Each structure stands twice: as C-alpha cells, then as structure tokens.
View 1 (cartoon, rainbow, N blue to C red):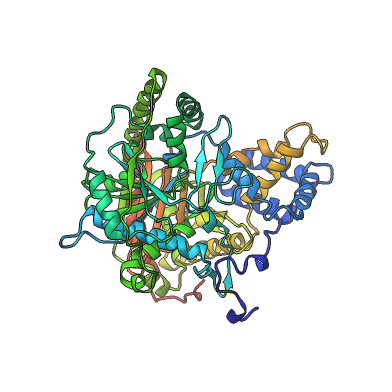
View 2: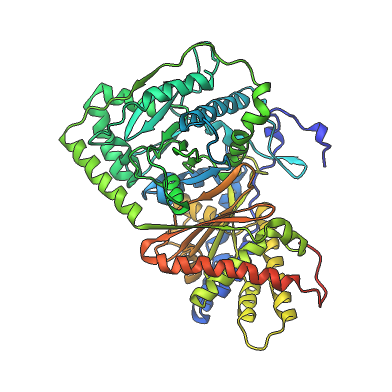
Length: 612
C-alpha cells in the first residue's frame, strides 16, 4: 500500500497506476448467478436454469470458449477496460427516449433565493462556477477522487464538458473531446441557454481564455429572457423522443439549410446547456418532474449536462448517462454549492469584458413541423404517463443507522425489500449500481439486493410468533449479505457485468468460435429474470445534493434514487402513472419499514454483531 504522498495531486496524474478491471472466474460467476436467482424462481424454473448453467460452464459447453475469448480481449494493450466498448454500445444502441430511460437529475442543496437574489443571479453564479470547474480539470488542478487511501480513475472528467450524444439510426454516436473519431473541440467558449422553447448561444469565455464574470453573465441572461414568446415549433422536444425518430428528423433538419447545420453544431458542441425555467414548480413532486423531464421544450437531452434553474432558485444537473456516472456529478455538485463561500477568493481574475449572445435559428419545412408536433405530443404523453413521489424522511439518517452497528446502504436496501414484500407479497428483483472507478475506465457493477437472507428476513418480519431477537438476527444476516455482495462488486467480482461481457463476446465472435446457436444459458428463466428490474435503485455521496432521480424502466416497477444524510434520508421514487397508487403505497410502506427496522435494531436485550 502506497503512502498518500506517493500519489500525484494532478487530476490525471495517477491514471497509469490504476489497475485494470479483472475478468472473474467462469465457475465462480455462474455459482453466484444461481445463488442470486434462486430466491426469485420457481423450483421448475430454477431446475431448468441450473441444468443450462451447468452445461454452459462444462467443457462441452460454450462458456469456456467465451471466457477464454473475453480474457484474451481484456489483455489487449488497446483495450483499457474490457467492459467499456460493450457498455458504450449498450447505451448507444438503446432506442428508448433519453429523459425517462437513461438520464438522471441531481438537484443541489442551494436553498431558496435570499434578499434581492434572482433566478438570473443564481444561474450566472452557477455558470461561472461550472467554468471554474472546467479550468481545474484542464489545468489538472482538480485533486483526484479517492476511494479510501487510493486514487481512482478520472477519465470521465474529460467527458463532462462539450460532449453530446448524436442520434443515428440503430446506434448513436457519443462525441466527446477524447472521441477517437470526430472528437468535440475542447476549446469551445460558449454555452447554450434554453428558455421558453428558444435557444441562445452565450459566450462565457473571452478570446484570451478568461471566463466572464457572473455579473456579465447575469446581465446577458436578463437580456435573453426578454424574448418571452415561445416558438410554435420548439425543436428541443425532438431530443426527448425515440432515438430513431430523432435521428431521422435531425438528418432532415441538417440537410435542409446550412443555417440549421450551424445551429446544431452550436448546440451540440457547446460546453453545456443552461435551462432557465419560466414556471415555478408548485411542490416537490412537480419539482422532481421538472428536473427529470419538464415539458421537454426547453431541453436538449443529448447534451452531457443540462443545468436547470427554476425561478425560485432551485437548481439541478440533468446528466446524459452514456459517458459519465453519478460520482462525477456529485463531485461537481459539491463544487458548485461551495463555490461562492469557499472558492471565489482563490480563483483567477475574471474577464473585464461583456459577454455576447445570439439567438440560435432553425429553418423548418412542413416535414419538420410535423416531426416537432408529433414529438411534442409524445413528450407530453410521457410526462402524463410518469408519476413521481418525493419522501424527505427526517426521523433519522446514516449516523443513527451506524449507531445501530449497521451499514446505512444495506439498512436502506432491506427497508426497500420489506416495503415491497408488504406491498406485493413477493421479493422484487432489485438492481443497485455500485461504482467501480477504482479500475481503469471503470463504470459500475450491479448488486442484487434479493438474497435467501433478505427473503428470510421479510418472511420472519411478517411471520406469526417470531421473537424480536429472531427478527433482528435475520435483519443483520440480510444486511451482512448485502455488504458482502457490495464489496465483491467493488472489487470487480460481480456477476452482471461478467455475464454481460460473455454475452457480447458471443454476439461479436460466436460464429468465429464455432458457437452457431444462442447458448441455452442466455435463454433461461434465470437470465431473463435477472434482466428485469422491478426495483431499480441507486445512491451516491450526498455532499452538495438535496435530491436525485431517474425514470423507471419497467412498466410494473419503481425507480428509487436515495441520498443518506447524517440526520435524514431523501428518496425520489418514480413509476408509470398506471402504477401510481401502488407506488404511493410503496413509499408509505417504505417509511414504515425504516421506522420499524430502526426500532427493532435499537433493542438491547440481545447481543449485536459488530458493524459491517
């Protein structure tokens, strides 16, 4: 183990010593796979899955050939991370609308506007802070993120600014400053401001490379919002619908006029989008939906980052997920919320000039007007078909959970399991994303929260004549199993990504390996069950954040994003509107489950194991 002084303080100074993502053993992964799906399958489905898994791993089966090919691929010098090309392809081949199926919002803990502070004042300060963050990355002055005492991969920071997902038929393109082909220019000086369905290019860096002051930016924003009348055909809604529809419309838009091509370039190559909301959300649910989707007219969901600021000062980052993960946005949010008080005195002098702006124009024909009208209708349908609920649980937080000798995340995950059991009477296949940036170009691994231990815990919690000691013991065993799985996932010994890699090797190289038919393993009930997430969950560090959220991907499922603070836990839960009553009841049951578990583990009448 290195001393901290032996690591570089430069942003990308430790990249060459970051280890590569390992390829787990085939038998180990298949054994865990059966362990994970067992509580979710009938005995008949489990038997079939077990038989196919055994054959898959055997010398006669396709597994060893796929494993050998994956190991060989992972060892190539031109492959930084064997998962990366498969992961990128998964996102870029996805055809579903980005706002509800991919993007995530991160709402910052900025508080309400005070005194004479305005929406434009707050937005301008955040824009200046974003540019300062960009400067830190480019000068390699942003200290590397750490996991414990070790630096982790920082490559995602090179994709934060000037990045955009470009719609194409069948498979999109992610254009970033480090793209292999047709990279985005890292020298852009402008952002794009979206307001009432109109878009404006705003220079935020002068010709000498110095950022304009927040005062100058605020003045420009006040001028921009004087254009209050929305266009009849707002082009931003095109980015909210299916990728093939948008790809077709974009091709028509670009070919119609050089002005359109230049306007698309201005938006797609901009540093980021600033969305100035004209309507103040009326409550937390409305606020959540505004940050997730809004009306879609003043958004450009393809961009890696959209900074959304409401009239009341609430602000969030809406992140396109292809190139970056939440841990990077959390670092950025922490910087933005601390910029005014902690960092302004330490940054270089701002430009003395006044920033310029111009409206971005589009020429439309009847075909494009029809595209936009249909996209607008579809966007409003998506909004109407999505339900959200925010739970600001303030009875206790992570500090109290730790005082119970429990791991906060495992505690919350088991509360989710208990709430779902109370709602539906059976365990829900649950996905929790875990960061793996301790590996070069690392992204995430999946932890599956349902285990035999969690099922036993929920059964005993609702069983007759079960003592408090039995319930508490079951709760701790379930949490310990979750902690174990999380640790293995962080260490690169998870299940989902390895099997995903084997599937992609089959897809790309199966015929070359003599595997002419889809392996039966990939057609088992266990495989399909593990790919359907009734509870899709995620968390992260909470510094600088107030709330985070994403859309549910399953018609009968829930999307659960939570933040554990020292004295509270904030949940954002989404579902289809058709499932709203179930979702509302689920959130009520979750609140009850949290209180019940805290009370259960607070009893001191029996010995408690040490903290996980």
